Image: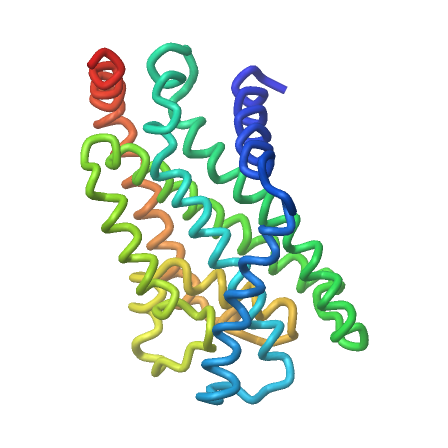
Amino acid sequence: MSHTQEVLMTISRMDLKTRYQNSKIGFLWSFLKPLLQFCAYYTVFKVFLRIDTSADYPLRLFLGVLLWNFFVESTGNGLNAYISKKSIVTKIKIKKEILPIASYLTALMNFGLTMIIFFIIYNVFFQHNAFIYSFASLFRFLVFLVLYSVFIVSVNLILATINVLFRDLQNIWDIILMYGVFLTPIIYTISIPNKYLNAYYFLNPLAYPIEEMKASFFGITGHWNSPSHLISFLLSLVLWSLIAILVKHKLSFKVVDYLWLKLLT
């Protein structure tokens, strides 16, 4: 393991440990918070509004909440990655992009722990129909988890850099997340007319991988076999990755200078 990888893993583990060190129930909060969030959505959208009457809706909703919280946690911490660790950025010679990537890894560890509990629940209710244990379904889930992760890391790099220079970004991002959960297929299954789907997947690169990861668990066809939808998502993913690279190269020196100034004043 290289020095960069060791630093990355150390920071990620420290962040995860710090989060729960003063908590009475520790890691259980990682499961309890999405569970309570799931209960709220289920009560409103299943019990009262009845937007989906299928038997597997509760589990699809719960998985959607876990995937959404993975994104929210990673980008929320990634946004403040440079600011919260400004002494590391300015005093230790490491690649600065390690810090927003570490925020992603911390969220990934947390997501992995909550997925263990999801697997237990999934097996209790779907033991006769466990699609995820077929190679095709598992491969499908892992492929889109990787693509989802590439998007998250790209967003983290962009947010962490811009937030140093434009501190209002925190409030703007909170508002985007507040609306984003309703614009992404967390609570519902996409029912947009086919002619608009390509534009939707391009404008919301969260939607396609979340839909496909949810579909892989429940034997749903999804849009896996639609090349145009996949291409729209991939084009959006490439665009976000290029923006992340551009922001990193153009603004990285300004970030260090600004944080040095903050440390000295």
